[in-house]
Length: 111
Length: 115
Image (cartoon, helix red, strand yellow):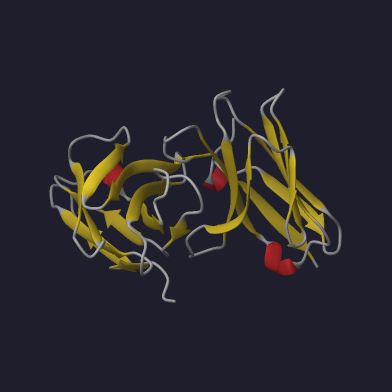
């Protein structure tokens, strides 16, 4: 499984390329999913969310894909920029339960 | 509109002491959630308050407690500090339409170091 900090999964991409960050979730009852970005020294910042009645949602330069069959969520970032370098977290929730966060993926953009 | 404000940003305590952290949510937000972030465990949910009532609670020992005031500001307290309590404590606010779902707006955190 993933872990944060020293053992954080890292994705390195060239500036201008597209990035795909993956997340597996375990609770088949989860009906709400959200991606956050956390830059060094800052709190997590909302990127995009999706409800379980959808399988795709697009924002500005970002797309979230949800595959409920295999309990998989992905975040696609188009034309990755140096400012996209950060740790990305997926989070899930079911009903009225609190958001449960994944351990995060570090995205490094190579200029 | 001002964001979520957490104080203090950094603090150092010794084992056995207690600490109180403060969080001012975004104006109009009635829900405040607290998370503990550590390199090994990631973001773990502590508790959520809505209209001065604890609505959800995570799996933390009773040394961790919180409260919310009538103006929606929240505090959390950790008593009898242990080395393992060293972490970044994040507060997040939301409108609270559904308990702790929907977009959470995070503060920049209070980094606690226990020596």
